[in-house]
Structure formats: C-alpha cells, structure tokens
Amino acid sequence: MMVKSSERHQVPSQQAVEKKGWWRAHKWFILRRVVQLGILALFLAGPLLGVWIVKGNMASSLTLEVLALSDPYVMLQGLMVGHFPTTEGLIGIAIVLVFYTLVGGRVYCSWVCPVNIVTDTAAWVRRKLGIKVSSQFSRSSRYWLLGLTLVLPLITGVIVWELFNPVSLMFRGIIFGMGWAWMVILAIFVFDIFVSQRGWCGHLCPVGAFYSLLGQKSLVRVSAYNREQCDDCNDCFVVCPEPKVIRPALKGADKGIGSLIDEGNCTNCGRCIDVCDEDVFKFSSRFKG
Image 1: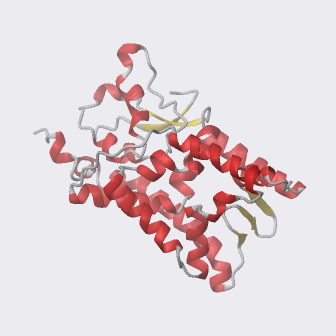
Image 2 (image 1 turned 120 degrees about the horizontal axis):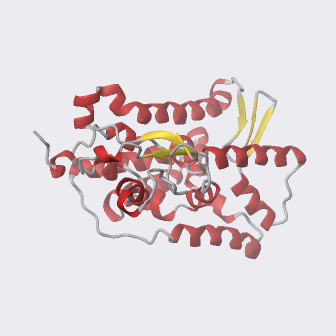
C-alpha cells in the first residue's frame, strides 16, 4: 500500500529503511558525519592531545608538515586589505580550487563545514516538531552578502567577515571555549527552526555562495538516472538542503532536460539517494548523466 506523502514527510527515510535496509537509507548521511567529525578531530588532536597531524584551522592548514592548504575565499578577502599570499599559500589555494572545482564547490558545505551539523539538526527538529515557517529570504541574498564581505575589507582595512564567520567562531570556540560564539551558533539553530527553513545555509551564508560559484561545472554530480520510477513521495525535496535543484532533473524529461542535477548550489550531500526507496538517484559524473 502506498504511504501518503504527508505521512512520509514525518520520517522521510522510513520507506527507504523498509525497502533498502537501514544502512542504505542512511549511508551518505553517516559518511558525511564521519568525514566532518574526522576533519574536526584532526584539527583538534594537536591543541587538545598534543598530536599535531594538522596544524592551523579551516582557513589555512598544514598537514604532516607537508601539505599546505588555504581557503581561496579568505585569500580574496585578504587581497582586499593588501595581504598577498606567499608561494606556499598560493599552492595551497590552487589545490583547494582544483579540488572543489572538480567535485563540486558546495561539497565543502555538506562534507566539511561543522555548522552544517547544526543546521541539519535544526531541520530534523523542525520536522520532528512539525514546525512550519513561512519567512523566506531570496536565495540571491547570499550573493549580496558575499559581495559585501569582499567590499567591507576595502573600506575598513579589516577582514570583517572572519570576525563573524560561524565556522571560524565554532572552531575557535571548541578549542578555547565558546564564549559569545555559543550565541552565534544558537542563533543560527533557532533561526533555522523558527524563522526560515534552511535559512542560513540555503539563503544567507556567503561561504556557501562562494563555493557554489566554484562548483558550477564540477565533474561529480547527482543524477536522477532512474527518474521514471519516481512515485512523487517528495521525500527527496523534504531532506534536500537545496530542493529547487532537484526538480529540473527529476521532472524535466518532457521538456528535454537531462537527468543530471546540473546546479552549482547542489551540495552533493547524497540525502536524496539515501531516502529514495525507488533508487531514483545516484552519484554520477557530468559526462555520464
């Protein structure tokens, strides 16, 4: 018997668990958490345990005294205040740019950023409590904020965004004590539950806006390759942090639109793959569709 869409939205993965098993219904979600927490653990092993595998932070790091990585977004802000990266910094920036250009820029948002854990939890709480929010921001807001974070350094001579960046605040807070960073993280959590669905990551975060631009032509994509099997349960739309990217690939066959989710704002989180009991989605490449 077909479960009604409204019933399934309470637990989007329920049908998938029954049909595919618990692991396949949560595989990509679990793997993301392992990667996110693993990256945090590598950074924290040094200051907390004295095991210096990775030194630095998510803006600039050195792994095993060999691999230097730098955040190109922070580098751009630095250029605005006259800070030019060293040769080592340029190499680290190039590595990051190539990686996120190939695998999808917003992979950073779903597989690396620790704030994603907070916003995913907020989305889960909102669904669990049945909270409906009507307030929405234009998705272009994050690009305006991105522009603002690059203009303010020119005006002030300070990398202003790094004073408020929740990722930086959360990272520093875990090591040195959260202080007022708790208030920022709590504000994002409450904002996503009661004010705007997926409000921070989906509408406002300039970091996500920057990485979405990097991922416009990435090779790794999610494909609705089996879209003719879709039963319109809408579970993929419920769990997707950027649900607008799904519809063209899923419902565009009659318009000649391919099955590839060809949108830079897709985070490649894999949740649509997890929760679909009809196995409509899979990871693919730009060339295979």
